[in-house]
Length: 413
Image (cartoon, rainbow, N blue to C red; front, side):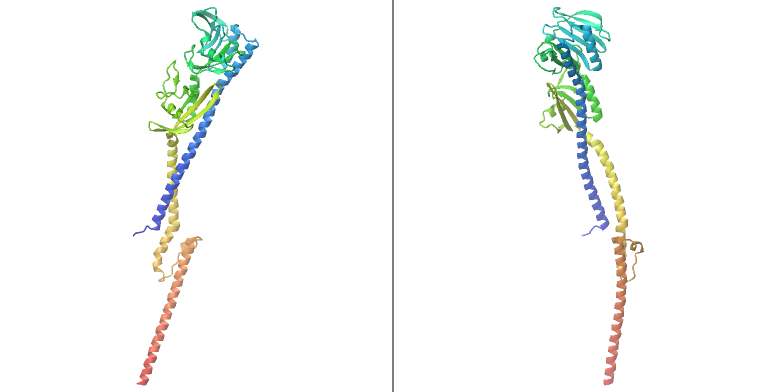
């Protein structure tokens, strides 16, 4: 059976070590890279939570302020221009607020609306059935134009009025189409002065949340998908997976949002799912705002983990191969070549004195071995010389004995 030379055996061992190290490096690097991405998602989720809080919190605070102002009779919605000024100042600071509404138990209503930069009022008087008055306002809230319009509007029939009527705190509505702008939106409302049946509601459009969620997507990766879901039922913001149709509220369904539908029906909070041969990592962050539960669902395709990771791994493999070659070259030159030189001269042991001047100065095992071989060659030569002299002496003694015996026999004759 033919055996490998030590050079090839060493090369095979180096290749096996390289493969094992590369595989281990892949597994550990993949794990840590994925773990890093998880922490990055947590950071993005916290940023989105903070972003939504910057939208929701000022509205909550302002509603409490209005409650106090009305209860202490500082604010009266029937003083239209004074009320306009107060509410417009707030809306200018928070442009995502599209309108602020007021209604009482008699059916009187007030609304201030920022209609794409144009300020308007809608006044509903209970006695003026079937009609409302629309006021056009200047930048200070003063009425510059009035028009009486046929409209059967009644604030008592609205979402925001009904939800706050029997509540002791601020209530956030489900998503619905706002009557004023016809955009999908949500409304926060409060029953003023506890059971007074006077209600104030603040409308915001949810398209602003989609803008926020797309900015966060860009900070993660272009292929990442994000969804903001309320009460596990309505998709109120997402990263442009489908073309948004006007005046439509989207529910979590398998047709429009198959990936989201599958993940929300999964039992695990954080999991990996497959859809259309694509593997996705899912992260869900939940929080509560008053009476509503919100979930930020983040989907990351596994290609995001692997595309740059594989490229980095290729660079690592090339560097490892180069390093392996250099190590092999060094060991071959410093250790394998001397061993081959020793193997070549060993057959000459005993025939001549062997010296390894270029190796004998080394202080490692090769140096010790070269000195040992040189010393052994000298000792073998000395032993051979001694053996030759002994053989010559024995031969002389044998000749001497033979001659003695011959002389003795000659005398006897």
